[in-house]
Amino acid sequence: MIVTVSGPAGSGKTTLARLISERLGYVLITTGGIFREMASAKGLTVLQLNLLAEMDDGIDRELDRSVVEKAKLSGNCIVEGRLSCHMLVREGIKPFSVYLGAPAGVRTTRIALRDGRDAASAARETSAREESERRRYMRFYGIDTEDLTCYTMILDSAASPPEELADAVMKRLAGGTGNA
Image (cartoon, rainbow, N blue to C red; front, side, top):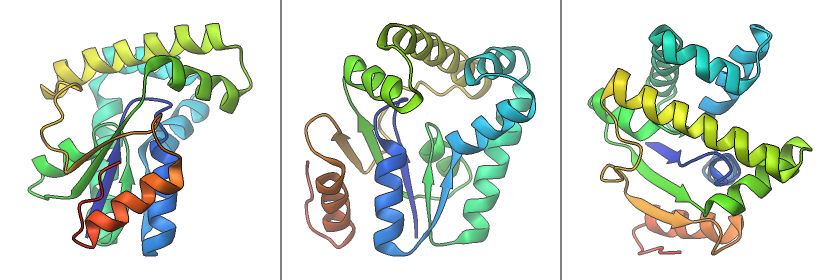
């Protein structure tokens, strides 16, 4: 089984994906981690690589191909990333998919704390990054990041701690309702 965890930056998708991966004993594939490694290898920030990717669709296509291929090879895995559900569905794979959202202020505060930055710069960069991604995903793939129709569950990470969100996902995977 493939489980995807998607959502905007700072929503807690990596934390949730790790918890689910640990509970199920599945391989964890993190798209954001792969993208950050790509940026670092090029000597760029994540925002800089996002902006470069607006001009070179090969960056996103390479990343997405890699993630889909790893998911196919892994079989039982958790795939964390903004487009993971959309990309797998396009490949004929119907994952159990979770969308994790949170208000922008909550997300940018988390990002600032995670990265050791001030909230104002984290908010500016996150907004610019999300706008860059929104444009790219629509132009390259025709995907509207606000279209949540491919998701099995939609959760709000501001409303519940990560462990409760993971409990809700596990309950739903086991056949319960699991709303959080």
